[in-house]
Image (cartoon, rainbow, N blue to C red; front, side):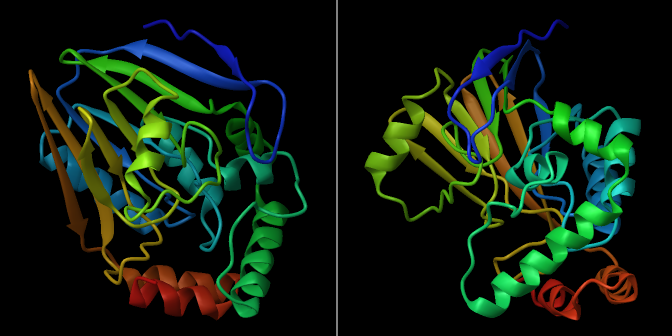
Length: 265
């Protein structure tokens, strides 16, 4: 299949040359992997579960590093298994050595810890990983069983916009107007949901590696698209949380992230 690349002008942080990949694919069962954030154990677990459930195609939504120490291993896994995806704000910031990740903070402690994680990731990322992150497209668009599907990290407008379920309907309508897709899939908030509005299906895929909805299990999002029906399942997958938590602490990353991982926060 041939990718068609065009330029996207509006990005946060702003940059030139952001790419959009467009494909046509008669896929019926799709696994979407949101916000892995360096958690290799969680990634392996959801990948295995998805295969067991008969998934035919995988996509990731970016933010492959940060908060856990396996950014290089996660990217190697993604490349080995040929999982296409989009660029998250964390990916873009690491790849271009930005001063900050473009994240939002709830309090000064979270800001301090997040910045420490960001600096750790920039220090430990390999040149090969940086090149992969740099080359990810801003968006992906494909057709599946007569439906047009668009994938973004956060939104079709900005790669660090927090698109929560309780946003007003007007916001959902505005975002839908920026693409001709009837299924919009994104992440960034680490909180999964589905919302149907105005003939569109909006899906936040949650997070594989750093859930924030109070459930520490990895979130695997499966889209089953057949004719006029669009089924979305949020499959929670058990994995060795303690193994990842121990690796976070051993790596020199703040233990703060190990504790939040245990709580799904």
